[in-house]
Image: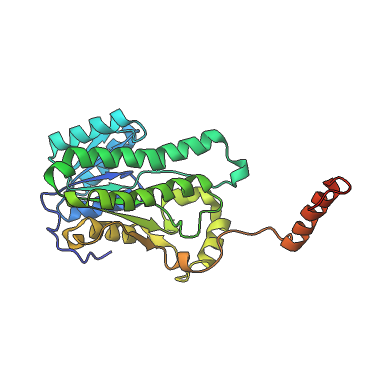
Length: 286
């Protein structure tokens, strides 16, 4: 994409992007680097970190990489200390790391629920609080952008990530109020269906159905989301905080996102009432 931003918009500013080795995160990393930022990413996989670093180095960029497991508070604290030591205080944080998988709620294992909540909700809070307390609150300045999901009408088919992302949505609003006195602005971005490597797990049939529910009749791109992340992390949004920005081609405003049971509700209700009536003892009132 052609950027609308000044090439030096983030010169000498330090930006952390979690989940920055692929998809939306990687597109954001490239966008910030091209605007002059000093960018850091972390991952549990050192192999993925170094592969990303080498790829961006070949494009002429310098990237700070360090192992970090956002699910572990000590790992997060160590990562943030390393970034501030090597690059300086953190000016902007993009909480993009996360993961999920499609499943109906009745088939979701407790282990799967815990794993997604731990990464998408707990991990986002650990990183947010650590960056804020180490860099932003002491300096009375900072931008935080949380990447969540299209949860405007619930998240049927992925209750685990819907619950986690809704928690982050509320955390965004809560911290926007608590940290306003510290001049820390915090917003959220809710992407719809975005063309990225993560889509492979959903299958073409599901994606085809998803396109039909998008008024724009197409999927979004990682670069489009990255441009919105850059805007919200910039000085242009000093009076914007606690908001969730949907970038989904209008999907959250229209269309269905879950097939309902064809069983008519009145018939179901009659069946339930019949069972209740049969269970009453003779002479027992309503």
